[in-house]
Image 1 (cartoon, rainbow, N blue to C red):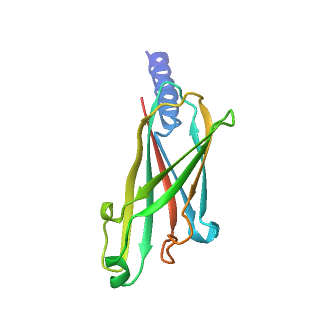
Image 2 (cartoon, rainbow, N blue to C red):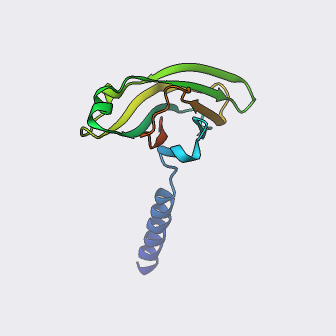
Image 3 (cartoon, rainbow, N blue to C red):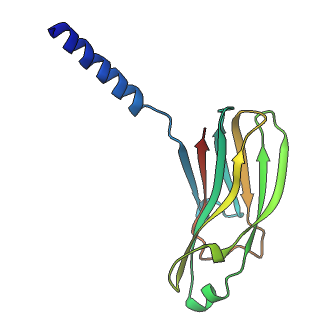
Length: 151
């Protein structure tokens, strides 16, 4: 009877250890504005699970005076992807301040970028997001990317 309890205890410890080492379902990366002086924000995203789909969001925080916040317009983002087999894809999307929340001097935004993404080549993808000159805001703290994996 004592051997069975020890064996059950050992099984429980292995099960708990395996569960605690499970791969996270979400990863976030944030690049500070001072680390992207040319307006280019670079991210590496692990999209290696070919049985999963992924949701991707952009997020940022912008500070400014109440009048600057009132005049805030959509910010175009040039998004370039490079696949593990070095194919290039690009598109332009808008970061809409209406999707954000905050006070009169600060606005936080998290906007959906892509939903249910399934990659034809699993692996580490490079994503470069460029804020074109003329749309770069002094009060923009940086840009983040959230990648959520779903089975």
